[in-house]
Image (tube, rainbow, N blue to C red):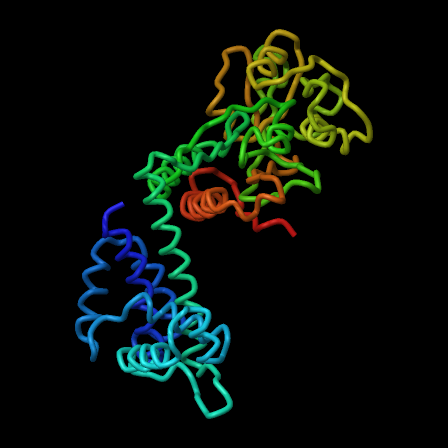
Length: 369
């Protein structure tokens, strides 16, 4: 990583200072947060950050000043803050005063027996803590790149994954996380949850339902489903179908080892009130298509799968009344602190927000409970 990335991070802090200093002006409140989102990641922002710092009285703020500020805010005591930083109290006091002069507002209210954050200081603290954490992550990531010790993130997908958004998600994450080696792992119907539980993948793009309490599930969106019927079947010419049209047909069902509730979902067991007739046990989409085309079974898919898995022996017919198919990011619940996995979830969520219109009839979903 060159100095550009560091300046992009530092620029967010510069804008934070401007927001606190001028909170009732151009960078105030909600407008300020819009500016942060707008400017973040744009390379030219470092020039604005440098120019802003150059205009301030006393010169540029230093990272040690920010570190001292956070320490005093934590302890609310200049002496204890100095001890934790292994410097004298006068050093801490001088640097905080210098920082306040540069910012143009007071960070602390001081008396002989009491230290407290000012309202402006409280706002500034939140932004400083986030920025210092981001800077630390940037330095750590750059060191990993320099040493050739990239963090590896293994992402599993089954079948169509996120449909037309899969490529966008993977590409955006690759560009946003240069310190992470992205590894793609193809999953099957029967191993998809075991792969997450056992650590074979760090995160996975999977279709719900997923009811394992040991897993963290973050729903992204839901989309319509289609019926998959043989090309020579009487249903193949229909413009649309209902659950009732399929409910008595033999289904291509997920083989033993697949989650029971997941297997039941695709073959309408709840709607039927019992298990479907079995037209074939399958482990993958190609096996399902073969069971439909040559075994006269039927199945249901997310609508995006129809475009990704064309087959001359089947027809994909819209279902008018079937429950929508939901896609989620799934990981082990205890891995929520994994920075790479968290960044992947953030990127995927952003792509869904921006490009969900590419999936007809899809609706955005929020995080699970």
